[in-house]
Amino acid sequence: MFFWLSLLSASNDRMLRFYVARFHGAILLTLALLCFTGVIEAFAQPNERTRKVLEDKEKITKEGFWIYNDLEAGFENAKQSGKPILVVLRCLPCEECVKLDDELVDQDPVIRSLLEQFVCVRVVSTNGLDLSLFQFDTDQSFAAFMLRDRETIYGRFGTRSHRTDWIGDVSINGFAEALRGALDLHTNWPRDKAAIAGKLGPVPAVTRPELFASLMEKHEYTSKLNYEGDVVRSCIHCHQIGDAIRDEYRERNESIPESVLFPFPHPKSIGIVFDPSTKGTIQSVVPSSPASVAGFRSGDHVIQVSGQPILSIADIQWVLHGTPPDGAEVTVAIQRDGKMQSLSLALEEGWRRASDLSWRASTWGLRRMATGGMRIEPLSVEDRAALNVASNELALDLTDMSVMALKVKGVGMYGPHAAAKNAGFMQDDVILSIDGRTDFRSEDDVIRYGVTDKKAGDEIAITILRNGKTRTLHLPMQK
Image 1 (cartoon, rainbow, N blue to C red):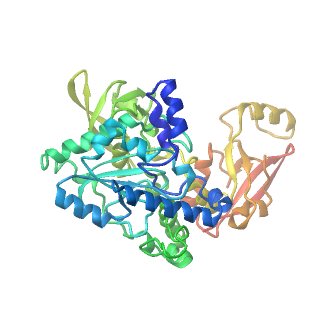
Image 2 (image 1 turned 120 degrees about the horizontal axis):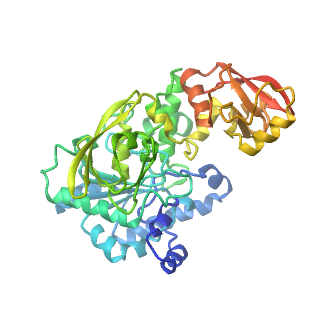
Image 3 (image 1 turned 180 degrees about the horizontal axis):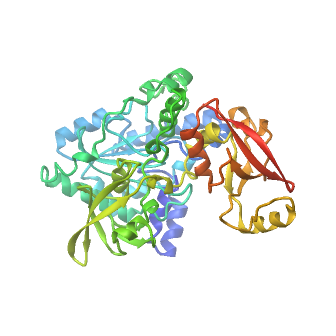
């Protein structure tokens, strides 16, 4: 959602002030009514939201550069013109997802000239979206696909590793590089046909968002936006797709797989920080990480991962997304000092757990299932020291950072998210053990335990510290 502010990272202070002041529209237009969706919908007036949607449709349709919410027309245009297709998924009318004025970006001499070489399609909802073709991180606020046709994806663009800060993940220069890379693949087709075959994913069990049982039953969504009625309420947002997938596992009383729980792992989770202004140049490598052990270095240019040509960080995430959670060897072709090399990245069982769930919109639903609506964070060093003094009866040294101590940052107050409150949990409680285990180090650990080891209807015993005394409470697991 704050994607486009990050495009300013390479600008000087004067340009930064210019863009921040001017960029409040959206060109490459965000993928889901993702972050703060509930808050926005709760406080925005329905008529105001509807007005924004209708005005956006009228404006973009009138300008005629972007094909508006009509993929069929985009594919037909590409077939007739021979151009590649750029599909940008964006939501309306979320203000958090509208940070860049499309007119200004379209007129940027570099980006505009690249966009003109594509058939540009703007998609503002996921109603009717072909999930066999468009597979993406549904927790994101922005996603772009560069395609040849329905069977060929040249690359993806748009990634995220923080709730509000995109600076380290994307930039306008990086987007330009991705577009150039896609144009090269298109110009030289079918030179790289075999290499990019893996960019198309397997056919999912549910191929259209409106076909998910939970979305049909609860909302009666259809394959199109209802412009004649309540257009805002008729929209399926991308985060609802991810929620529906997780809900189906829970409804079947099955564990949520780690591939679903930790989707599209960010390269940071394996120890690589990329320069967002490039297609795949490594900015730094975290010591002792899987990437460090594999021999990656700052300045390496990643050319291919598992044989797939890389146009952006999102392409790397796509390969990691398809890598088994129980471990695998991933072959990476790099360019170092002008020479090509091949490195083998060893990912051991559980490697996905290094990903961060805290920024994701889906964590809201996962908290309902696994923490009863509690928000949890590691207890700080300062709080550990203070509690250690105040808790005379405690037979633990909380100043020892290896001792489990998770603070309840907040508890939900309504509906299923009030399950923890109803079970007796309070803000500022300190969790010392769960089902007798003391190896939980983060909220992610607690959530993973609740949705993989436990099923809806189970209870977990949680020992907490409150007012210097310990007690054990029982928390129900939910659908």
